[in-house]
Image (cartoon, rainbow, N blue to C red; front, side):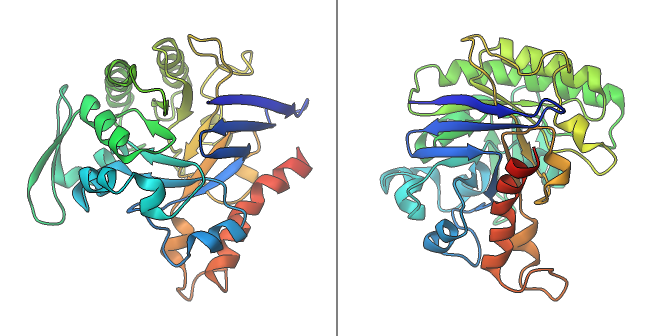
Length: 303
């Protein structure tokens, strides 16, 4: 039901073309994933997304858990009918909100306790609960809960976050074992320290995650480094099942140059946040997303 295969590799770099097969369709990679945080990509209908060449959409576990609630979405048949999107869907675990909602959360080994930005209520999110919520939402690809630190954190803080991410990944994997309709992505942390990212990548893969991924890279970090969480001598990571791994770059800008070394998928909320403001380089929403969707094809031509 799930598979990832490499179609071609650039002999002069780590650039590659791939094909990720899911129950709701095939994703030709590299691919850009528009952000539909609350179950919708702002300003565009599903038909317009298809017209732009979009293959997969990202939605957010934490925000959908708060509103309308994962039980409501499950009752309605899951995210695919809820969003009226027939193609593949990926959900973030809520780990990014550990970073973005830092003033409203407390962190412990057990998980994260959030104060809702909607009504002030308290909500506990553990690795097991993150998996349970995502199983109810019903996307094709789900994410392990991770601790996402700021890139300005010290090496010691990055190491602690990385080690907790690995421990949480093991708990997510345990909670996910009975689920066959979804594939679980592990997340690589370690900030700007190559050795920490390499260690995290190995341990995440060894924990049995189906496809490893890379946390978003900061402005001060070379994009090529973010795209290479494993040593250059290992051209592709493999998990405990022996399958070749994909690489996902949350927060990767929608332009071809930074992602040339060969991630499988990238996503960014930038296009929807800045359209239709006067500072946007795009004149319409559809042209914005078309430009994002085209970067994979541009990479195909440029290697």
